[in-house]
Image (tube, rainbow, N blue to C red; front, side):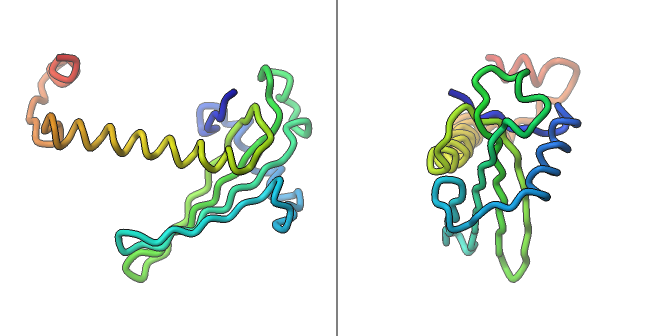
Length: 141
Protein backbone atom coordinates (compact mmCIF):
# COMPACT_ATOMS: atom_id res chain seq x y z
CA UNK A 1 0.00 0.00 0.00
CA UNK A 2 1.04 3.60 -0.43
CA UNK A 3 0.21 7.18 0.55
CA UNK A 4 2.08 9.45 -1.85
CA UNK A 5 2.10 13.23 -1.40
CA UNK A 6 1.22 15.19 -4.52
CA UNK A 7 3.05 18.50 -4.85
CA UNK A 8 4.59 20.50 -7.66
CA UNK A 9 6.20 17.29 -8.92
CA UNK A 10 2.88 16.55 -10.69
CA UNK A 11 1.43 20.02 -11.16
CA UNK A 12 -1.59 19.05 -13.29
CA UNK A 13 -2.47 16.16 -10.99
CA UNK A 14 -2.22 18.44 -7.96
CA UNK A 15 -4.50 21.01 -9.62
CA UNK A 16 -7.02 18.31 -10.58
CA UNK A 17 -7.11 16.91 -7.04
CA UNK A 18 -7.48 20.37 -5.52
CA UNK A 19 -10.35 21.14 -7.92
CA UNK A 20 -12.09 17.87 -7.01
CA UNK A 21 -11.93 18.67 -3.32
CA UNK A 22 -13.12 22.23 -3.97
CA UNK A 23 -16.13 21.10 -6.00
CA UNK A 24 -17.12 17.82 -4.32
CA UNK A 25 -19.11 17.79 -1.08
CA UNK A 26 -17.37 15.82 1.66
CA UNK A 27 -19.87 14.74 4.31
CA UNK A 28 -18.02 15.52 7.54
CA UNK A 29 -20.41 13.30 9.51
CA UNK A 30 -19.34 10.24 7.47
CA UNK A 31 -16.58 8.61 9.53
CA UNK A 32 -15.51 6.51 6.54
CA UNK A 33 -14.28 9.55 4.60
CA UNK A 34 -13.69 12.31 7.16
CA UNK A 35 -11.70 12.54 10.40
CA UNK A 36 -10.77 15.53 12.56
CA UNK A 37 -8.07 15.46 15.21
CA UNK A 38 -7.10 18.15 17.71
CA UNK A 39 -3.74 18.16 19.50
CA UNK A 40 -2.57 20.57 22.18
CA UNK A 41 1.16 20.60 22.93
CA UNK A 42 4.20 22.87 23.01
CA UNK A 43 1.97 25.95 23.29
CA UNK A 44 0.16 25.08 20.05
CA UNK A 45 -3.30 23.90 19.16
CA UNK A 46 -3.33 21.91 15.92
CA UNK A 47 -6.50 20.83 14.18
CA UNK A 48 -6.15 18.39 11.29
CA UNK A 49 -8.97 17.50 8.93
CA UNK A 50 -8.52 14.38 6.81
CA UNK A 51 -10.84 13.80 3.83
CA UNK A 52 -11.07 11.04 1.22
CA UNK A 53 -12.58 10.99 -2.26
CA UNK A 54 -12.67 8.15 -4.75
CA UNK A 55 -9.77 8.34 -7.20
CA UNK A 56 -12.08 7.17 -10.00
CA UNK A 57 -13.02 10.82 -10.61
CA UNK A 58 -9.47 11.60 -11.80
CA UNK A 59 -8.48 11.26 -15.44
CA UNK A 60 -4.99 10.16 -14.31
CA UNK A 61 -6.27 7.38 -12.01
CA UNK A 62 -5.30 4.57 -14.38
CA UNK A 63 -1.67 5.76 -14.35
CA UNK A 64 -1.27 4.70 -10.70
CA UNK A 65 -1.42 0.97 -9.95
CA UNK A 66 -3.76 0.18 -7.07
CA UNK A 67 -4.97 3.76 -6.64
CA UNK A 68 -8.25 3.81 -4.71
CA UNK A 69 -8.60 7.26 -3.16
CA UNK A 70 -7.26 10.75 -3.08
CA UNK A 71 -6.74 12.37 0.30
CA UNK A 72 -6.64 15.89 1.64
CA UNK A 73 -5.13 17.02 4.93
CA UNK A 74 -5.85 20.51 6.17
CA UNK A 75 -3.75 21.52 9.17
CA UNK A 76 -4.70 24.61 11.19
CA UNK A 77 -2.22 25.65 13.84
CA UNK A 78 -2.60 28.34 16.51
CA UNK A 79 0.59 29.46 18.23
CA UNK A 80 1.19 32.70 20.13
CA UNK A 81 -2.09 34.11 18.81
CA UNK A 82 -1.12 33.46 15.18
CA UNK A 83 -2.98 31.11 12.86
CA UNK A 84 -1.34 29.18 10.04
CA UNK A 85 -2.98 26.80 7.60
CA UNK A 86 -1.38 24.14 5.40
CA UNK A 87 -3.07 21.80 2.96
CA UNK A 88 -1.64 18.60 1.51
CA UNK A 89 -2.95 16.17 -1.11
CA UNK A 90 -2.19 12.46 -1.38
CA UNK A 91 -2.67 9.44 -3.63
CA UNK A 92 -3.83 6.45 -1.57
CA UNK A 93 -4.03 2.73 -2.27
CA UNK A 94 -6.36 2.10 0.68
CA UNK A 95 -9.83 3.14 1.90
CA UNK A 96 -9.54 3.92 5.62
CA UNK A 97 -9.44 7.56 6.73
CA UNK A 98 -7.96 6.55 10.12
CA UNK A 99 -5.10 4.78 8.37
CA UNK A 100 -4.57 7.85 6.22
CA UNK A 101 -4.28 10.03 9.34
CA UNK A 102 -1.88 7.60 11.05
CA UNK A 103 0.27 7.35 7.94
CA UNK A 104 0.60 11.11 7.49
CA UNK A 105 1.31 11.75 11.18
CA UNK A 106 3.69 8.79 11.37
CA UNK A 107 5.77 10.20 8.52
CA UNK A 108 6.35 13.44 10.44
CA UNK A 109 7.24 11.51 13.57
CA UNK A 110 9.95 9.62 11.69
CA UNK A 111 11.30 12.81 10.14
CA UNK A 112 11.33 14.64 13.47
CA UNK A 113 13.14 11.79 15.23
CA UNK A 114 15.68 11.57 12.41
CA UNK A 115 16.32 15.31 12.57
CA UNK A 116 16.79 15.08 16.34
CA UNK A 117 19.39 12.33 15.94
CA UNK A 118 21.24 14.22 13.21
CA UNK A 119 21.22 17.46 15.16
CA UNK A 120 21.65 16.36 18.77
CA UNK A 121 23.73 13.21 18.37
CA UNK A 122 25.81 14.27 15.38
CA UNK A 123 25.66 18.08 15.78
CA UNK A 124 24.64 18.48 12.14
CA UNK A 125 23.19 21.99 12.59
CA UNK A 126 26.48 23.15 14.16
CA UNK A 127 28.61 21.83 11.32
CA UNK A 128 30.30 24.60 9.30
CA UNK A 129 31.50 22.44 6.40
CA UNK A 130 30.31 24.41 3.36
CA UNK A 131 32.78 24.28 0.45
CA UNK A 132 32.25 22.30 -2.78
CA UNK A 133 31.05 18.72 -2.14
CA UNK A 134 32.29 18.69 1.45
CA UNK A 135 28.79 18.86 3.06
CA UNK A 136 27.63 15.78 1.13
CA UNK A 137 30.86 13.91 1.81
CA UNK A 138 30.81 14.79 5.49
CA UNK A 139 27.15 13.78 5.80
CA UNK A 140 27.91 10.43 4.16
CA UNK A 141 30.69 9.74 6.62
